[in-house]
Amino acid sequence: YYQDHPEYFALVNGERKVTDSKSHGNQLCTSNPDVIQEVAKNMIAVLDAEPE
Image (tube, rainbow, N blue to C red; front, side, top):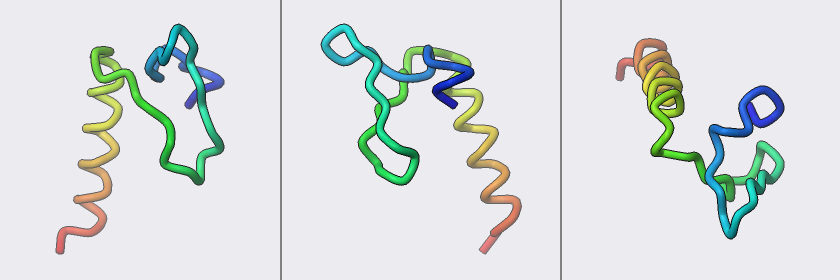
């Protein structure tokens, strides 16, 4: 997501820092409504694919 939407990631000490996609160190910008919508869309897809 970072390449197309750097604004999806939180500013930490004035910088947007993104680690590789396999780590869990990235911080999403939860004040961005587009981020909330994207997270919700992705979670709904996961739950639809694995309902149990």
